[in-house]
Image 1 (spheres, rainbow, N blue to C red):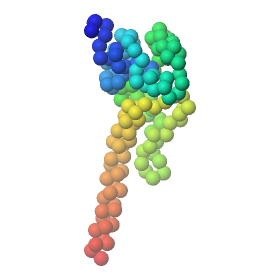
Image 2 (image 1 turned 60 degrees about the horizontal axis):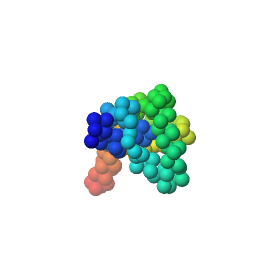
Image 3 (image 1 turned 180 degrees about the horizontal axis):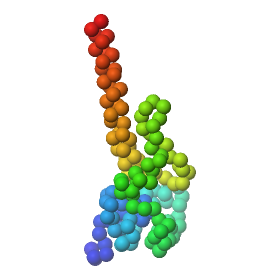
Image 4 (image 1 turned 120 degrees about the horizontal axis):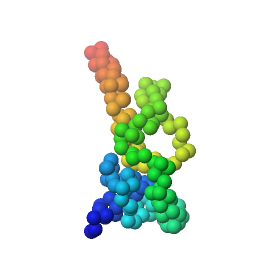
Length: 143
């Protein structure tokens, strides 16, 4: 493999991000060009009828015009971008309520990052709810 190729150039995509969730992915950060279409691109061809030429044109456009492509989706960058979309619901639990959900897809990596953040924010409340019901069960058992 030549020095311009690596595992990232063979599997990652400037459109869909790093397959390995690396913050320093050279493809996602537009340091090295990808060698082929990623799995998500291939899925769009097979399932949605996209043409390979259109996807390669989008890839070239993103590589040439770096400011128009999505920012690197590290958890910190992602959470900073969606901070206002995590709100406390009526039941006291935090939820992800995207304001601009019509602006593209959410990958499993993005959803996992959001889920981890919600779990972290909800941990104390969840413990409080569990403790409450445990106390209620104990009171009923004593009576």
